[in-house]
Image (tube, rainbow, N blue to C red; front, side, top):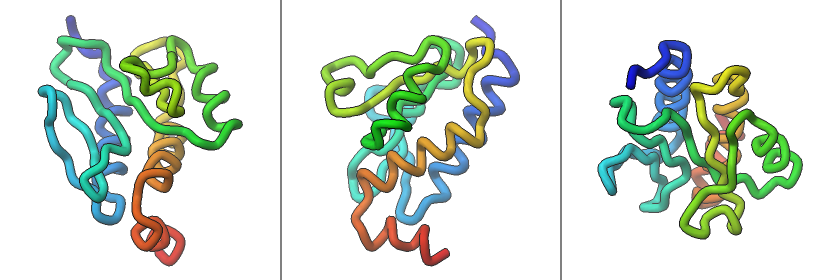
Length: 126
C-alpha cells in the first residue's frame, strides 16, 4: 500500500517537531516509532513503510482539544485501553485530515501532559 505524499509530509513534519521538543528521543518499541520524554511516550508515530495507515496517537487532557481531535476524519480513542486516559489516534491519509500545524499543537499538548514541569517550562521560556 503506497503512502499518500501529503500524509507522509505531515507525518515527517510532526515527527520533526516532536523530536525537536526539549529532552525528546525517538525509540522503536513494537517496531513502531514513538517520541518519548523522560522515558515516557508522548506521541505514537507508528510506521511510515505503508504496512499500516499513517497516523499519530497523542494524549489530550484538554477537553476541547480532545473533542476537536475526535472530530478529525477517522479519528478514534486509542486502543489497548489508552483511549480512556485521553489518547486519540488521528489518521493522516484521510481526506480533510488535520493540517500539520494543528497536529503539532496536539503533539505539544501531549508533550506538556507527559514531560516533567522543568522541560515543559523550557517551551515557555524559549
